[in-house]
Structures are given as C-alpha cells and as structure tokens.
Length: 220
Image (cartoon, rainbow, N blue to C red; front, side, top):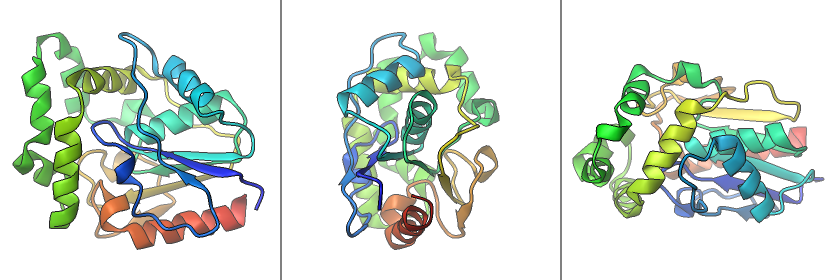
C-alpha cells in the first residue's frame, strides 16, 4: 500500500476519541485534536496551518467527520494527497440547512453559554440518535469540553467556506441515512449506512472500518 498514513480529523465539538473505535489493521491511523483557530481565519488558511503542523504530503490519506471532513477536503484541494475520506460531511456549503445560515447571521447575538448547550445531554441525544448510551456519554463529554470560541470559529469557517466539491485524488464518502446534523441530502455519499446517524464512527465502527479499509485497498 502506497499510503503512509491515514489522518482523520474530528468534527467541531469533538476530539480524536471520535475516530478511535475504527479498526484498520496495517494502517497508521492518526486522530489529531483540532489546533487553536485564529479569530476570523478562513478555513483555507486554517487548513494550510493544520497540514503544515502534521506534515501532510502526497503519500498521506486525509479524512474526517463533519467539520473535520470539510477540513480534510480543503487540505486535499490545496496539496497533493493519496486519497480523501469523507464521513458524514458536506463539501458544497450551499447545501447546508437553513438553520446553520440563520445561526451564522445571528452569531454576534449568541452568548457563549448558549453555545455550551451543545453539551446538554438531551440535545446531544436528539442530534446524534440513534446511538448507544456509551456513544451518547462520550459525545456529551466531548461537546461539553469544547471551548465556545472553537464552536464560533469552526461554525463560521464552515458557512463562509467556498467548498471543495471537485477533487483530483480518489475519494470515499460515507453517510448515515438518519443523520440530523448534516442530512444525507447535503452530502454526496458513495456508501450509505442505513440505520446510522451522525456519529457513525462510534455507533457503526465495524461498518465504517470495512468501507474505509476497502477504499484504501482498492484506490490507494
């Protein structure tokens, strides 16, 4: 296999634990936490910093879930990589649901404590179901621990981003049919997990691992 590493970025409000249930024998899988964003920084500039931080090059496969998938797609747009793995994400921001655009328009009126409600367990359950109690507990913990400043900056980056729909590298896109955070219609999935929501790396780790593993073997 030509790929040296598979680097998977988490979504906003999460950390590297989102990816750790995945099992890909023989592959060096890195699940880095997000680096600190700069206020007003566009996703393109942030992606360049991230790529430099991790020394991402032409033998690496990059990927991610949700916001992490957008980040990976922007990295693949900027520099040669061996492949791209999109997990429950959207690379055409105009497809994002109206609620994201409304929150973006009202962002200066939203206090930090309201953003921290992302870690409120009933809201986590609604956003990520269907999910196991263990997955919901982890998602609640990660969302509660994420700084409000990260949510502000990553959310702004996602809505302002011009997108990266066309990629020159081999690409895999996986989506959960029951995703409420980034609905199926927002993505371009090649693999649809029928009974999965947004956090399928936790709830459907075996199926996700199988799809990613098959992609790496066939395309890289």
